[in-house]
Length: 303
Image (cartoon, one colour):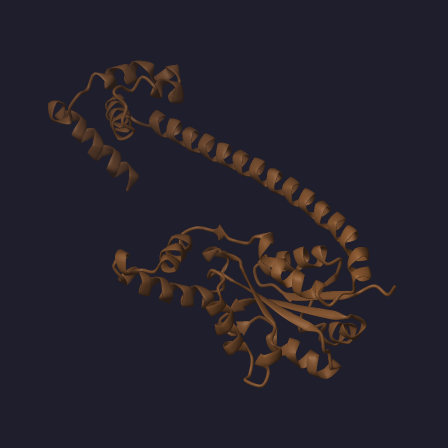
């Protein structure tokens, strides 16, 4: 029996397409390779050794990343079995796929343009200046609409615009995996699936370990941040006069919705305990006009 050989080629701008490419390669026991412009001749030539070639790219302002090179390589090497996938921030739908086929393939290319769409992530900070400009214009247009006039997708994208949201999911690749499997004989499929299952399990284990390690790192960074902020506040209190500290601590307790400033003792330690107790007796700024002067002093110091 001759093994069915699959190659996954990809171009990834922010990493999500690379993740999908590796998921696909694991599920099909395929080889995977980054198809950059610099190594065009290398991967274009290698394509001839495979029974199926899968091309992937993220959606950018020019269309599917790498699509022109992919089509040129297919024509040059006369590849007959191939498929495409693209990664974008909008939800997957038949309309989305059809729109990308129209945008990226000429009319005579569309009958053979087997395209699969996967949802990726939206990380505004990681975008290029041009992508930020385009996304910024889109967000402004959405924000101008009344909330009730926005589509569910527009509301979701608007919310994600202010945060790093990752929609990538392994389940998206299944239709593409099934499509490639339809080219295999029962014997090729029986040979491939156990090996692919081991690769998928190993990648899942690695990803879970990486995610757990990242969560621990984020907890460490968060704890360090609050520790530094608490120390900065302690240092700031040390530079204040007693009157300024009284006002500052009372205002802090008020802003945090505390009935008293007793809980603040734990934050600032016993050296300010006497001042904190005095501050806890203040019920209204109107009754203690001298504290307003302290507030002015604090604001002046901040300037």
